Image (cartoon, rainbow, N blue to C red; front, side, top):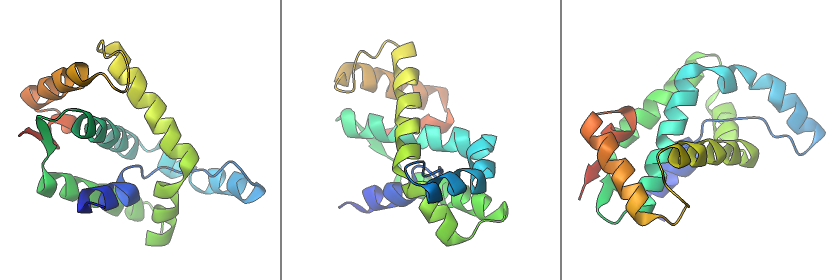
Length: 144
């Protein structure tokens, strides 16, 4: 597994709420602050979108240093809200939250004319647009 994939697995989606069990319901309340935080929400959505672009578009790569620094900043922000490293990790690894961000990312791509998860041309176009705009997503990527 690439270092990036490992970092993404831990940091990509600093999102929460295990909803599959009673304990998950308790976690939903415990992590509501993380889930509702605009910086975390926007940052994790940017990472999710950037990761899809990198995986789909062969001419765009991640900017390792920038991506890792961005993810570290998100994790530190979450810990600054009073959560432990372990709680942040649980939040990040929650399958339901990861799926929630994937749904949001798909909506983002659809709004930009990307027709499916396998639309290489669309993902590349969106990636180039984000890089050109210097957006948070674009700053995580580079044309290779």
